[in-house]
Image (tube, rainbow, N blue to C red; front, top):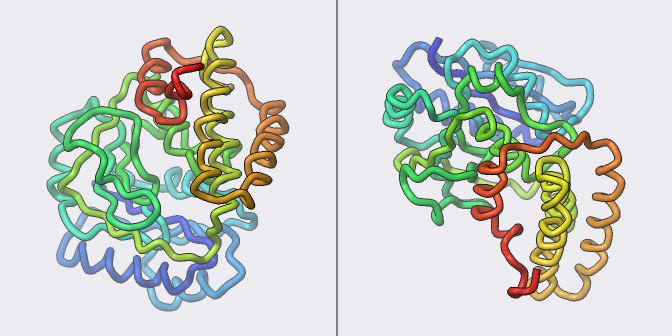
Length: 287
């Protein structure tokens, strides 16, 4: 089998139905694909809806919500050569054949970042066919052999920035991450289960944890300071009422780091990450 669409869902029954309908419309008349939905212990009618309206969909039901790591359950049972990663509120609009043709011609590319339109994290800042660390989890293609070699998304992150953590391991394993502008993903960005506070707390905590886990001991203190201080500039955008978010994020990082094993990556991978990720750039020319 060539393609496995793997969709992660949590309490977004209506958006999930829309994603499934749009995906079947995209693949109408085509063969060699499957659609897998991982339900992350939803309390709404998502599971019953999939069973009733889309009986041909492979349904993986989790008994607990483990965040972004839920995708891994779908990756594990997928039969496709390529894993098409979608959120319950995102779908590919066009350009999939071209993207797969590109991957077929480039076995060195482990993850293909797609052109995500809409949502909080559009990819319009990226350059077509340029290598980097950026991809968005609601619209990417992962080579199945990459998952088999390095595993899936990190369960210790729970949500947000898992793409950067995965990118470090992909690059360290010798694969490339490339942006493919001509495959468009519509991220409808449901407001369900999303808040600015949660985004900021988890993002800062996770960005610091990534540096703590993968950077060398000689370098990571400097980069930890950069990540926190660069994020702290967000107070100007979010307002003074957001200051407790940043304090909470720091507390959550100190709790998380106790369970992290230090597994430093190759220096060239660390250097590429630090140059590509705005949070690890120099802070005000000081640090």
